[in-house]
Length: 305
Image (cartoon, rainbow, N blue to C red; front, top):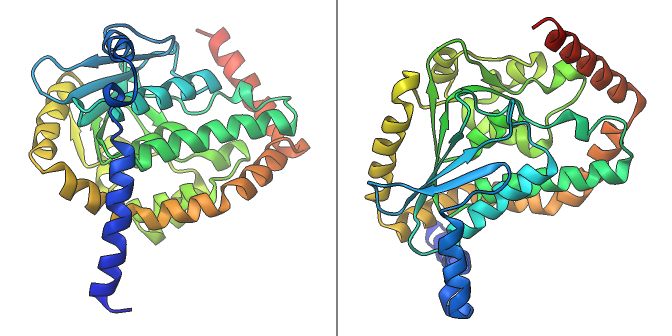
């Protein structure tokens, strides 16, 4: 196919997606709904805080706050999804910084209690929430910057990779996809994202060994873009966001969609099949034993503190 012809087909599709992602609530709802949306930004949900930045126009902060380690259960993933959707549907927001309200831990990843001793139907519903969250992050028209202010294994690494830019705090923190150490596997779309982020060979080694990278190692392989002092991470993330917000939205979003649409289309084509396979795999006896052992380890570790 000629490059010009391919471009002519991609652009209209991207414009359609851009328009659909920027629905103005005030134009489709009664005035009371807009008041409700504005009020929502001064409050907080159970596990997610959303606030308007005081100095950068168009910037919101999305802070995860599910103590002790921001583990991702169904409710928290739904709240994150809703927070991003509300920001996308509010024309006054153009970017968001995703971080933790509890420095020292970005998120420990999936809440494994949601996967332990559950039937396949329950796990399938839970996995669907994870798929929805990834799709919302990866396909968002917003500029998304991850301010990784603590440990970020597994699902935390997934969320950060789905953002446009990643800044990690220096210190004794790690990030990576360590699913295999629990007897679990990274899904096809997660594997693909890891390969596109750090390259085929690095991903082959890291995924099979469940490698956890310290901040400097993560930067060297491309898993994060910048490493900064913990006390400076929010101010530096804000400065970085200002660079991205200088780019006209239409040009940036179209470019992002052209870069990511192929992965999203592949994901959508296979998501139901993958969800069925993962629910069966996660509910299998061997995986359940591994999860049980890991939970026992966590219980013993808490007991020694």
